Image (cartoon, rainbow, N blue to C red; front, side, top):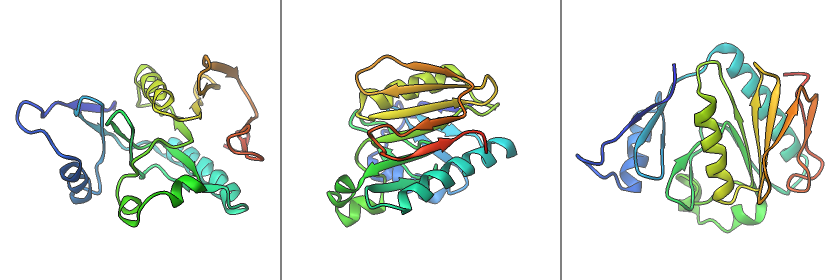
Length: 190
């Protein structure tokens, strides 16, 4: 099943608070909102993708826990991007200084910033074209490094700020480069 996009704009223009409350009232549904305000309902993923995502998050959290450079987030975390879209990457990370710059209220709701780093997985049920657009949106909104992992084709697309996309075929690991110094994502265990 692919993500479903619904345009409620002709009927109601949800405020940020209303969108947040909609998400809280429906915890079993994963919502995102694009730059035009359309709601995107993300379907649940299958077991293989869920397991792979968990292993990726585990590696990111383990690395993040060994230093005080930043904060890691799972796929349930919402980010309000500078363009107004609300997105939830499969895994993400922000520098600690940016976290400390948020108020307690901002920390409790969708974070009003773009992460420094994101990972998106292509599940069997999703559309690669949709995820390409999402990764470009992240890049255009300040994400400094992003990985789009496609286990079916065994390819990884690397999105870097101000650079063209790099495609790697069958990599065994990925480096966090200078954005996440010392972070190595081991793809062989996934």
